Length: 110
Image (cartoon, rainbow, N blue to C red; front, side):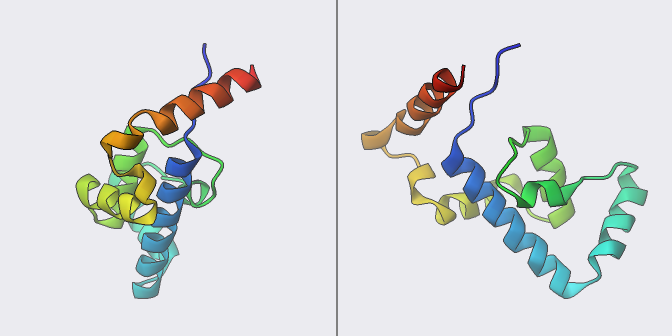
């Protein structure tokens, strides 16, 4: 199976947004209780701590579950991601730049 591309700018922005939202949620209540309540409701642990480090490549399904836990829509989440790193907001002048860079990095690793 071919290795997935990883766009560091995207991963870092997603990580930072998750970290900020997670810490905001922590300020409101006990994270352990929130995690346990969510686990009891969906019968699955999110392992959200893994996504607060930059060494991940989150799937769409996992991101949806994280957003569900954090009580934010995907569209609002990605608005925050674009604010975190303006390179991620579509601009015709930079179209394909980050994707091309990610594929070049993947080829170097192979």
